[in-house]
Length: 195
Image (cartoon, rainbow, N blue to C red; front, side, top):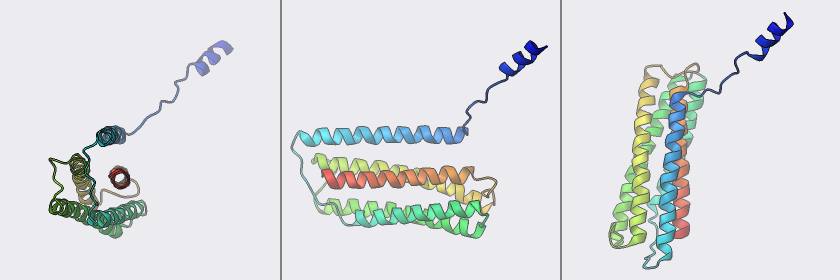
């Protein structure tokens, strides 16, 4: 009888590590974005070392847009904390502010491109300018995808589907948005350092 009980104890199923499928997909997506930008940074450094590299001053609006994106990250965190506390009014306000600041960031990036053109820095003809446009354009594309995720969370918040017992949407949204902010900070410092 003891051997049967011992056998049952030994053969109990072990707990498996489980992860939310949507969060897993998000992390895979983030890793792919990191790989994309890592390859672009590597190509930038290799091309810069080859010569024929025209340096230019980054327009000031990119500094301001960085501040706007940091404020949007603070608003996103406010939204997350509000959702955890079931503060629905603050949640809606915070996500709305994040969305508006994200749009403002995109507009400022576009204005920065216009300033680059005014400085005779074009997409074609100057490798440093080309890379600058590619970096900011790729990041801008990901900001647009982040705004879509934000819009999805904003809609859910207005339908009261985001609350303390259902934080999945806001967690995914906040993780992605903070990642995009950190990515921009990295790119900003990288372009300031190596331009």
